Image (cartoon, rainbow, N blue to C red; front, side, top):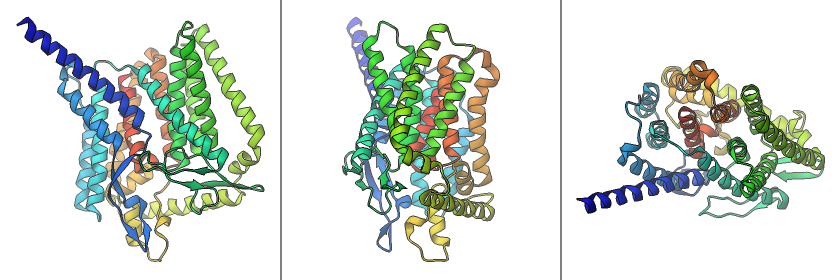
Length: 440
């Protein structure tokens, strides 16, 4: 009997270690775009990017993590209630297959969504999460992306690697996301992600997590503190190099929220560590501003040719979204089918790449899932983070505050971009952060 019990304990311990490794591996791989393409559509010889479907490496790891976690249910909290709004939102996404034009695209999108919601339910059901470790792993992963982005910016080109999901980019190429000034075209930092704005968003989250991890380190942990400070510096420089205005804005909002909520909860030593860290980041920003002010100021000026073009294009996309919502108010055009709907309804022959999602996640969800899906999503956000603020504001811990600030950063970004809905990594990241906040 003792040997049998000992063997069971060993198996349980092994499964527990495997589950932890899978979680941290998933967190590490989340930003990387290694993918198995399942379907590609070409229109007039040009790839229709938003109709492409695939299965990502981090999703495979996530599925394994979910399987091992649900198998070991003893690590779950008892009587944990499931948020019915999340289930209804997921059900509505799958139901939209009935009226969507590209059913495979909707089904594929809904499968990605179900992975995100399962992760959300799992995180809030677990008895314990090592947030410091998760934040550290995520920051390290993003720092590799940062080094790649820094290399891209200073060499003005990027290599391609299908195994890492990195595509080749050069400043002179059409379609590359660049800045323009009197000195010519400048390639923005992509890292290993499809767009600088996506990298910028991931960097914002990594910086928030990284700052919290740095502040939790003890004085005697000198090596970890120096390494953490180096990673933070690299990631902050990479954030500047993305030239992503939405990411910059999200980071500033997050920092403002952190300072506002911590002002009465922070002790003197922690305050000194926070201020010294901000001094380092401010010094990096000052050096970058002095060196590349000719790139930064045109980025913020609407009269610049590229910026003016970008604003005009976004205005057109905004009007298109209003028209789609008006014509599909109750049901929407189907999950993941926004650009497909534009392609089919377009009366003029234009390049397929011009059919872009509206740069606003809320309008995009409204257009794809109608008023029902929009209200469900809004309800999820409201009840997820307002619940903790309203009922336990006085009990907010520094961890609560930092994760809350990351949610607000994502909300700001979602008002000016669409990748948190259209990019699978972004979609899963959203549910990961919501799960972290509910659990923190």
